[in-house]
Length: 218
Image 1: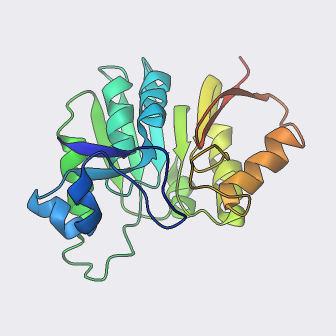
Image 2: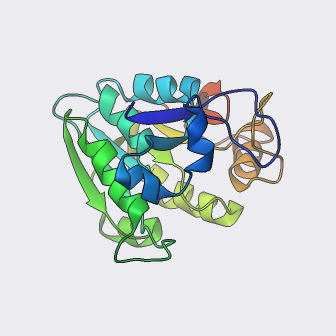
């Protein structure tokens, strides 16, 4: 098994469950790098399928926040054969930056898929956007989860999404058996923008577990 996704229901507020039981004792990315466990997703199987489905046929995709790369795997599995997937993550949380096992696991997981091309930008999204010029078919926002940071990613990147394109927020909805709470930054932002208010030119296209997809008119 190359990757493991979360299963439901969750048993507590601190534990996330995977189909591979031994994963719980091998959570550190070091074990993933050694090949003793698969790359770990931070999303459910239903969310994985949704990301793959929304990526289908799209040619310019961006993900903010990569972790061990399983959401990027979903996007690459679905995107067009000639697509480019740009992955943005500073990978700055490693205790040992030279080794950075999470980055190594991510590169291997994403590299195991061969569809299209992948570009890695090892930087913060607010820095990467300064030199960005291309229109985007799909953007997945899953970086810093502070409300102000999620809103900044939305404001700085959503303008690049072409008509008919989509923005996907992860950890942005409450759902039965899930891990999100009303205090999550993505939940607060999505509630404010798309539930209590509206964003001109955008509408909610789908919600599945913690994932919400908003589509640009056109």
